[in-house]
Amino acid sequence: MIKKNSVPLKLNLGCGRNVKKGWVNVDKEEREKKLDLICDLAKKFPFKDNSCGYIYCEHFIEHLDWLAGRRFLENCYRCLGPRGILRLVFPDFKKIFQAYLKRDFKFFEPAARCLNEADYKYYQSVYNDPEKIRRERKDNPPPAWHLSRKKEDRDRLERRARKFKYLIDYVDWYAHQFGEHQCLYDGESIVGILKEIGFSKVKIVKHKPQLDSGEGNGRVSCFIEAVKSA
Image (cartoon, rainbow, N blue to C red; front, side, top):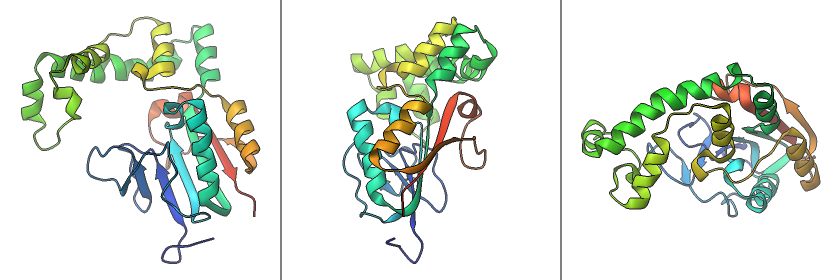
């Protein structure tokens, strides 16, 4: 396995704000000036074959369409060295649909708190008074579209300034996330794809609070680890 400073690379791909110390944190868009690398992960990664020991990816693959998602996983396989590990976290739509059919309101409570309280208040505020948000977040500006006056950006804000009332609203949010999610998976489908690509010892594993982020993620996510053959 190719090493950097005698230590195999650890990649945190599609990380958003969830940067990890000691990892190479990668995403397409810089938000808080904490990324180590900015690149489009739907394309070939700028890492050499067999150069990585561990790849972590949380709640990103569902943002790609099925073909880009497959190529993303193939890229992960290419970059990992022998016995390298891929840990993949994504919304488990089997859990989500089962909770909906059982009318399990508790299952959706974490999402309800986030969407109907913090998110709702923020997006209402930025929609109604963007200049106030600009002043308040002078040292930590939000994405440019939050403060834009373009109709498409205003519509995008208004879609987020929404109260969620019905269980199907939450299912819709998990499935589409305002148009950002492009593909649905469950454990069976991802395990099958990873084995087709060439990974061995592919298995569904448990939530790791020290590694995986978010209260809701442990409840609604599927966690899979796959090992590249030696």
